[in-house]
Length: 205
Figure (cartoon, rainbow, N blue to C red):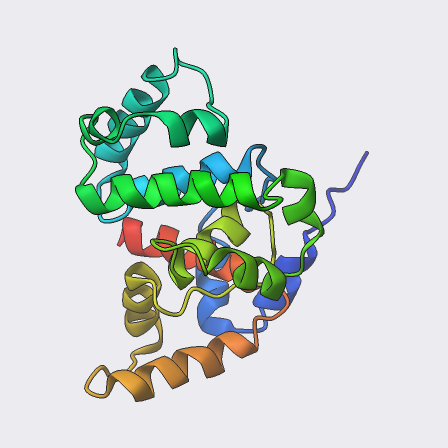
């Protein structure tokens, strides 16, 4: 009989008694490395401030522009602005998508190069792209590059879940942020997993 080994992150995060209450209620989490991280970055920008359903529709329209296949940065850069805009993107997002494509053409944004970078190096590399902010890079680190120790302190869902779970005072935004960072510090080096459980808790509450 094979005994299933508990993931290391579960034992570590369970030291936080309030977080431990969430861990037992939800399935174990796995992080997956994605291929074509550049396209994943474009998709992340497209989906900002949209529901998952609407974001999926727009992304599928985006792929349809290229015959249903994942385009290379060169193809995205060459696509006429109005055609990109017509799939349901705002003017700003259309510019941002093309900014990413051009940046990828001018720099080595290959999966291999990104996989080799540290979290901080990824941030330094991607943040100069206009339209790519800190939150977007954090999502790329978590969901495309499979980094285990990322904490999205400015994510609204994470904030709402922690406010509810830890009964945090919301009157002072700066103090709230500092308190969240202090709590999350104990979760390192598995803060990404904690975020996954917090998001799930918020969506199910």
